[in-house]
Image (cartoon, rainbow, N blue to C red; front, side, top):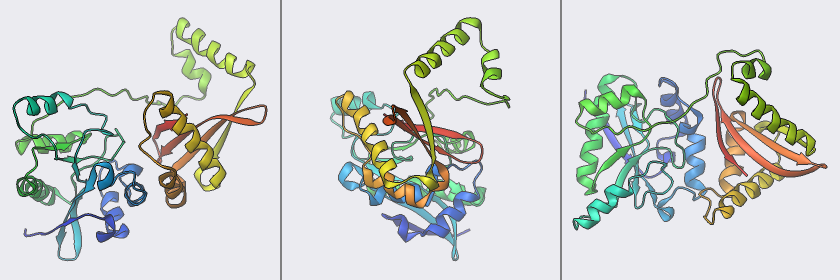
Length: 288
């Protein structure tokens, strides 16, 4: 099969309908791979060439159909990846070799497993891997990194000669608890006691929780959340990756995938968090 290859610096060159259509054909896609989320990262300037994330997405076409694609960036640093390769960069430096720029396939600032080698079939995926390798050679970058791919894609990359590196994440799975008390009943006595004590302290402090669905969130809700989010970074003397424009954009373009939780005391907000979700999974991402 001969595919027509495009390397694009903007998702708009692929188009929302084509991109999201391909995402929907993948096994276990998530909202972070959607056109709305990625486009908001780019258009807000949160993930852009100015911040060290230069989009260089690969798209393969079979006639007029998008047969394969992958999120890909030229990276000039390793921030915002949540995979730490500083030792590799240091080894390159000590041997007089440039580590940056590098190619990175990932969702910026999002350590969530999901499709990276999106394709309509195995032939298209194999072709995409070949184009990825050719892109690295043509770009003259040091290396290519694919972060948080599903197991099937990791095996395909290993078969193509890519090295695997392993990491650990902790996921909480709900087997169908009736309520929170049933969940607590599965824990040992000490854990139950600690959790109940923590929840009691919240109640005694007069703190209540208000849930705001994305479709109901106002600009004031988003400004409050962003202020809390910034405070978390400021407390650690660092700069947040995401700006208010990004959050306002996803609030407009993907509200059905968003839940805000606001903690209030005496009628005044004191904390806020944002959860992104699909039909069966909650991704707790930001808080403050």
